[in-house]
Image 1 (tube, rainbow over the protein chains, first blue to last red):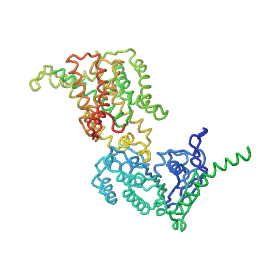
Image 2: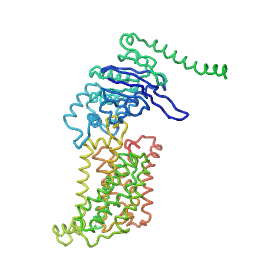
Image 3: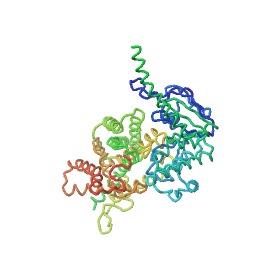
Image 4: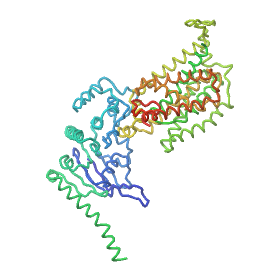
Length: 270
Length: 316
């Protein structure tokens, strides 16, 4: 179970540019739920993921995962619980290490790293088996430098790495946005399959309305650091792209109204 | 011939410097100025201890340890106190200058009438070959020179093998990933600060070992002997990487060693041809500058992308 209580994250605190990237956000997510997060630019969805992963520290609120308070735990010490795939396909792998070496690093996610050889025949055999599962022809490229693979192949391997040790929480930050449509589709299907098979708790940020309605058990819409819409169960299943467009339109109108209303008030009272 | 053997021996000794700089600059992308100080601290500690009657081997290891400490200090200044990497190294290097003078007591320590690894090598040579020159493929060579070369070469091979094994362990591989993509290794639970501190300790331990051996080979330790050594090491490893043409660990380590030896030979030849020794550092700096800039210029001229990065670390 993931619980956020009154989480506030500030950018440039105590300056004229102060931004409330997350504004007193509370949220709880049941285990084995696949949550899709949408929102316009600057709505706080990436901030939410970065705060969960520990790259950002909230100024207020508490963060619990599986009953543990992880609010103040540094990023590298949360890694035992959290797997992560980034938007940039190059962010999740070390380009000058081989496919097998990258996977070997993921096998020790959150565990201590000692003076035992990182790779052995047994590990390599299990890598080959899991890569064959992906159906991308990667099982023969274990000893290739990852930098020589395509973005889609690297993203598939990152996904495998993030889920190798069954994380309590999987964070996906627009992880298909930088890929061509066909590859994005492939990675999306792979993502869905792994989440179902491993019964993972996952948070996926996306810009694609189509993905938002077809994927996941629950949908969160964010705006200006707050949660503005939360749909699960039958409501989520009935959701269509048009509904989401309408909601975005409404938010945009409210935004436009704010400054003009302020001007009106200003003229009326000052 | 004896000149060649001498150059090869110094080449092997300085290849430890090359390996250290390969670790800091190529693996961690860290231009570590500590090198100029840690090569001296290795020499100073070893010399001082041997003059106090400590056996050469433990004295040399103590020099290495001092280098590791220097590297850790730079690593802590950079990671914990968030000081820019170049400046962190410069701070440690500058502080080491005074520390080295304190260790040595004066600016130059001769190692004439005491036991050193070089004198030990002489004893081994005496036992193996006697005192007469030996005939090596038609050349008359001094048995001491050849023994020193074999010992230096053997030590470097041993260090290289240990490094090769180490960088394939869980810890060593996490270090390589830190330099390659630190965001990724953090997401996988690697403490990148700690990994950088350990890596710089390892790098500077090797550089200090190089200094300790060099002092014993030359017969003195000097507080000035570190000036320009980072650039010397860069030049050596750049040559090695150009030859290795691969980022793979085994190739890269061999390249760092071979490059160091080749560069030392090139310098010996240039000096013999009449290069003014005062110009040596100028020429070395120009060489490194050229290798950093030329690949980009050539790529622009030919419109081709290069397959292997040689001059600059692959991820800079």
